[in-house]
Length: 310
Image (spheres, rainbow, N blue to C red):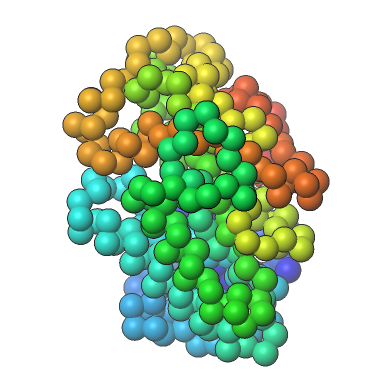
C-alpha cells in the first residue's frame, strides 16, 4: 500500500508509520516546516511532504496515487488544562487540518480513502447505555468537538471519496497515552480507580488500534467505526487487571474532587461512562489480539508474548 499519514509524530502515528514500513508499505508523512528528523527517516519507503494547515498549503500531488490518507493530527486532549484558549486549540488543530486534507482529496481525479481520527467522546457520558455506531451524539464539549472534527471531512465525502471516522476508545500502550502517568503509580502499588470506578471504559490496545486502521483501509466501510475492544469494562475492573498483572494492589480510589483540582474540566472526561461496542469491526470479521482487559493488561506490563503489531 501507499499511505499518507498526518500526525505521524504522536503515539499512534509514530507506531503506525513504523508498522507500515516494517510491512514494506510506502509512507508519505505530512510534516510542517521545521519538524525535526527521526530515526526512521533513512528508511527507503518513507517520504516527507511539507504542508501548513494554517495557511492552507498542501500540494494535491502529495496525495496523488495514494491508497489511503490516515489523518491523526490534533493537539493532545490531556496535554494541558482545558482553558478556553486550549479548547480553541483542540478544536482548531483538528478541524483546520481535516478540512484541508478533505478539500485536497476532493480535487483529485482518483481519490484515496480518508481514514480520519475521531473518538468515542462523540457519545458523551451515558451511564450503562450500550453505545453503537448508530447511537446519538452527546451534548458536552468533547461531543461537540468530535462532531465538528467529523464534519470537516465533508468535502472528501461529497466528492465521492470513502471516508471512515475512527471513533477510538482509550488507547492502551506500555508507554505514553492514557496510561503514561498512571502506570508508574500502579507499579508502586499506589494507583487505584478514578472517581467511583463504576464508569464504563471503552478501550483498545495500540496493537489493535493499528490493526483496525489497516482493516478499515482494506474493507468497504464508511462513516463511524467504533475502534474499541469487544469487552468494555469499568474503570475499577481495568485498574484491577493492570494491578494484578503487576502483582500490586489497587484499592485506593482517586476522588473526583482531587481529579478536578489537578486536571480541571479534563477530569470529567476521565470519569465519563461510555459503554461502547465495536459493531462495524465485529460485523466485518476483525480479529482482536487483545480482546479482554486481562489480555491488554498482560501486554501493557510486558508479560504477554504477543506484543508486536500483527
